[in-house]
Length: 64
Image 1 (cartoon, helix red, strand yellow):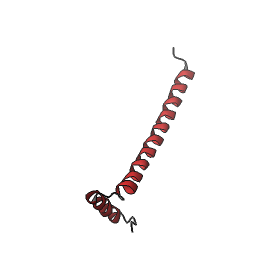
Image 2: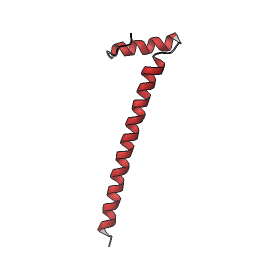
Image 3: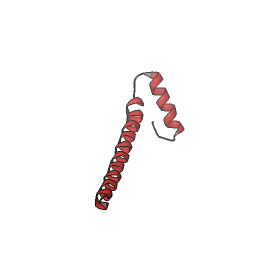
Image 4: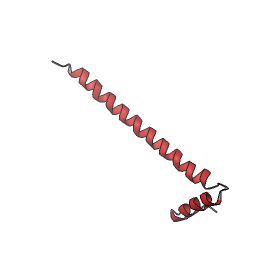
């Protein structure tokens, strides 16, 4: 027979791990977004800058 206490602890550990994964994914998504808007948008390579510029205007993000 299994110990009910052991099953409860396993379920709680899985929930905590899932919460941590969601937070890590959100932080990485924000970092990628800041990189695209900040670094790529101010790039001196005209093709890269123009692509970011058009995307910012399409999303109503001020850039001037």
